[in-house]
Length: 157
Image (cartoon, rainbow, N blue to C red; front, side, top):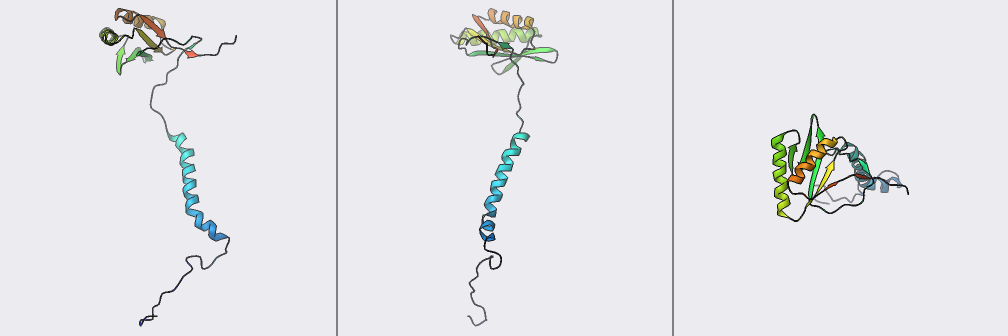
């Protein structure tokens, strides 16, 4: 002891009192809390997270695997028109200037490489006439073959 009456005292910790079976559980409490929070975030995270994007519904078909291609066009109906997405650009099939720009872009991309096949991913709500208009634009741009993608369905033999 010091002159002031103060001395170091060895304590048992915060568990001087209480039953012995509770001590290990209380020691593990922070780890159990973290584990429960991780499980909670995992369970709730899937319900809250929404993915931004476009809902795209391919028509059913029993087609074979097609040719490989680097030219891909996505065709979707929007409000009162049909939109074509090609090389991070948007084109409206109802607008003559936009269709002409799509043709020029297709011709420029087709002339760059040896890819003469255009893969068309068309939503099932797109009218057949609009797909034929897109096929005409592609033919005028120098595309030799068109490949229309479908959703694979199992065919019973």
